[in-house]
Amino acid sequence: MIEGWRKSSYSGTTTACVEVKRAPGMVGIRDTKNRASGMLSLPSTAFSAFLAAVKSDRVR
Image (cartoon, rainbow, N blue to C red; front, side):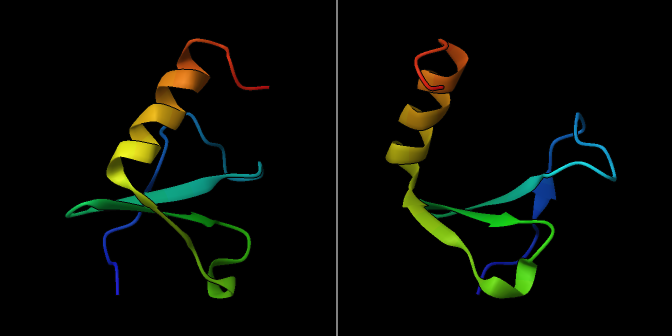
């Protein structure tokens, strides 16, 4: 089980947000509005590639 979830400081209290948690070799992602529904687990390298794509505006 992954503990220590965090969300962006840019997130508001009424907007759709996700939380992330880093663990050795992986990153967990979950919806703040429905935490009980589970999480998406990605290898750390895949999550890093996803963030790089978002930051470079390649993901829409």
